[in-house]
Image 1 (tube, rainbow, N blue to C red):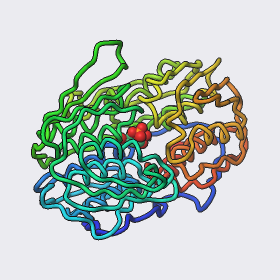
Image 2 (cartoon, rainbow, N blue to C red):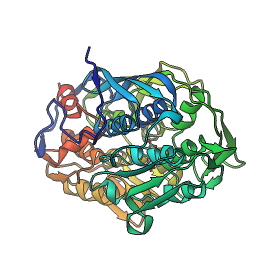
Image 3 (spheres, protein in one colour):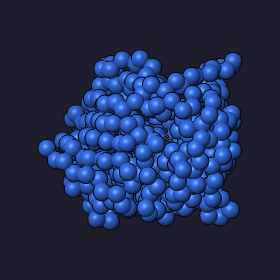
Amino acid sequence: MIERAVVPGPAPGREPAADTVPEDAAHIRPASRLRGELRMPGDKSISHRALLLAALARGESRIVGAGDGADVRSTAGIVAMLGATVVRERETGRTVDYRVVSPGIDGLVEPADVLDCGNSATSLRLAAGVLAGMPVTAVLTGDASLRRRPVARIIEPLRSMGAVLHARRNDSLPPVTVVGRTPLRAIEADMAVPSAQVKSAILLAGLRADGRTTVREPVPTRDHTERMLRARGVPVERIVDEGPPGGPVAWRIEGRVDVRAVTEAVPGDVSAAAFWLVAAAIHPDAELRLSGVGVNPSRRAVLDHLRRMGAAIEEIPERPDDGVGEPTATITVRSSRLEGIELGPTDVAASIDEIPILCLAATQAHGLTLIRGARELRHKESDRLAGIVTGLLAVGASIEATGDDLLIEGPTPLHGAEADSLDDHRLAMTFAIAGLIASGETIVLRPHSADISYPGFFGDLEAVRA
Ligand code: S3P
């Protein structure tokens, strides 16, 4: 057993995982068949939240099977800088078990240095929500990509709760300085863009507010924070508005309630699983099995979109959904004949991280795929709307972006070419999967970024090509 304390200090950066991540380009040859059983890294979104909530809870929390990508490590570094003891106990290369011992929210300390969030917007935005309610001054920053990502969306609501925040470029870009305050004012926030990160920042600040804070989202986004707060004894209520499913939803949190320390098992990351779901569905001779995958209703849209496209996906439930914990399933996927699909803004919000790999699926689907209202993709680790179009065009796809929409015509045979990940993990993995069905050699530039969410991805790619 490995026992290693996370030392307070800058986040550990982005060393490639110890497996087969190549230097500056990954050369991918087509696979004659795909077979195997894989275990995904722990869900990135849940792992960030588990670490931050462990910092807020007094006593010992255990996080079993957290994702061990660079983003989650950034959050572990932040939690250590706030004065909690973070111990890495069991490492598998993909996952790590953490033991976090915290003095609780009132015992946390002002960080002695800037908080380095690396590439991780989730670390930055959620930590801002926590810091807003603490009597400290802290600076949140990150790598060049993170310093291009919008923060006005968190600054505005956290300011209206009484914290003082400033950021570069007229309060729009990191670094962000947070001067927190206890207690905060409870607010009713209306979010302009669907964002689970913004919703979570407001809920985490709401924990430190006098009274009840309400946050309304235009369309539903992932609800991990809400479930995890409930599981730790904090009342969080879902207020369903009238109207069709997929419409606006509001959440209300009770302030000044203690967060309980718990042990939580993190499910496999469905956003990582999505790469294999598509790989098998578009490959002519494939069968892959993925066990322990998180199938939370607010995260599983990629499975449903692919099924609607005709993907042969079987799902055997493991952990059931009790509305508080996280349901899981074993998923088997086989070679499929896919059809084009139309996805609107609600679908996009529900599968925001899977749009790049869904675009690859669409290149192999019969007919047109239209993805409407994908503007938020421009504000991810790269401008993903531009990056996906450039990369897939390079390998022979028929794809265009018009405004915030994507139009893809299929099926098109893909051919090897250079595709640039733009240092964006989801683009790197999408282009690597394209290489499994493209003729010749596909060269993915800057593949290291896969380690952000999926350490071991290139090892798994080699393992399943039989
Ligand atoms: C995340 C929310 C999404 C997603 C990101 C993780 C989260 O971002 O793209 O990878 O854990 O809350 P937005 O909330 O900005 O859409």
